[in-house]
Image (cartoon, rainbow, N blue to C red; front, top):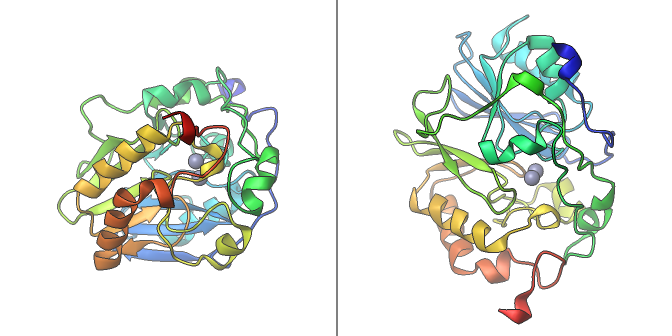
Length: 285
Ligand SMILES: [Zn+2]
Ligand SMILES: [Zn+2]
């Protein structure tokens, strides 16, 4: 069965880091965010239980680091009930193949993301011409070929429930990618946003390195549908989350989060949408 499992042909190590790399933050007792170079993974579950789920799988060649993080929090030889993906970009599926081989657990994603996770479709090439800094410019080296998860990948249930996380609902938040999802827990307002919005200007090497906290739309170089991206941010803001873990940047909470999300919705064109780039056409509206 494992012969079905493979990384994309352009799988490679990407040299990029931040001061947050290798660090973890316990956002809530059962919500742990850990930064792999420049992207976050989330462990949902109480550390004294064996009941937990891994959301997203970091950068290429980070499986060993993720295994160490999981063992430190949940004990030696612990493994999650499942891996759940916000979307299939290279920096969120970097270790998924190795981890599935190691743990033999199911992986869940939105059905519209499955072509990118079953070797069928590549993502469009990142937009190196987009308005933004060094990371946007270097994005041509980012892998876009699909991973092949074979029979390990499953669609999220259509009723909005999240496998093994009964208190969470998944929310379709497309724009950054067609099958992008976020996860929300009503009882305490915890949001795992993926790349629907992020708290760092991900296009800029310096800001990524320092992790300077600043509300931002989805990373520009990979976002293909800006109308949908705005609708998704409106949807998330309406939930009034109290804390958000985003795919990139530090977790944000309470008033800062509420005010920042409101600002992002109201000034989306200015804050999020690039002035130029191949996925925007502001002049022909
Ligand atoms: Zn992404
Ligand atoms: Zn990302």
